[in-house]
Image (tube, rainbow, N blue to C red; front, side, top):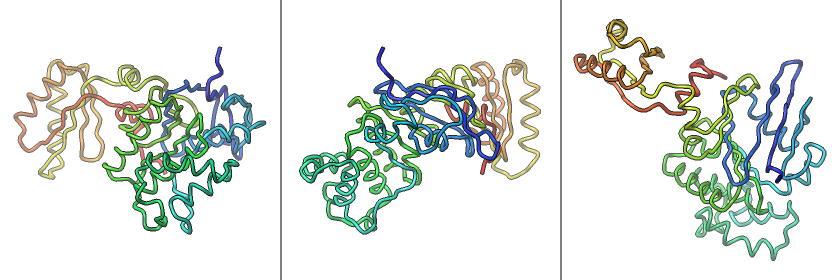
Length: 315
């Protein structure tokens, strides 16, 4: 049986007596994309540190790239790439100099880096920015360079901590395309993100954690089918009259066939979760309420995430 790129079993980590990672287990499949999701404070960052050997677990076992962690963390990290959440590129260097200097950390010679440079620049679409200083790059360019830098050592596993935070839609889609290219080339990806559509597009397997504990695991499609109703209707008022939504909510509850539907209110929006028959009933009712606007869509991973972790703001 082949050793998986990364496996974690029964991980525990506490700070000041407060559990941050609590009996967490998961395994990455070679060539797949694994997503670790959770609200702020759920334990994602600590889990990443444990997996990379940057912190020692209180209990549990970790194997990364065939090495026991944290005992052989140095040897393991030589085989992985890390794209951190915040760009930490050296502003005093150009694009190519940032890549070249980073290669020295892995013992790569000038000749080896010269052989890899064109491919890294092509991958990040920065061929014409080779000699550009970092402060002259856009946010999307910096993210692409950070991703290319994580590939300097030709890693087996790539850790991506919120890789598209702060990017516009065009830049996000370009990063997604690059990540799909890496998967197609057999790389194993470990992804954390707050963008549920990103996780739904990219990940083969997702683990959702909260309070340091695993609360769900599966493919995006499996999680949606298991945890949420098939249809979602979001209703919001255009008049600003507070009682309009309440009136509609009461009317919706009185509709026959709505027993299987679920309703939530968040701010000035009503969310109805149900299946086809309930959705048809609601749409007919909305047709008689011209002051109400609505969106009718299929359930997605964000609906699952909110149902499992709640709508409350986490700081």
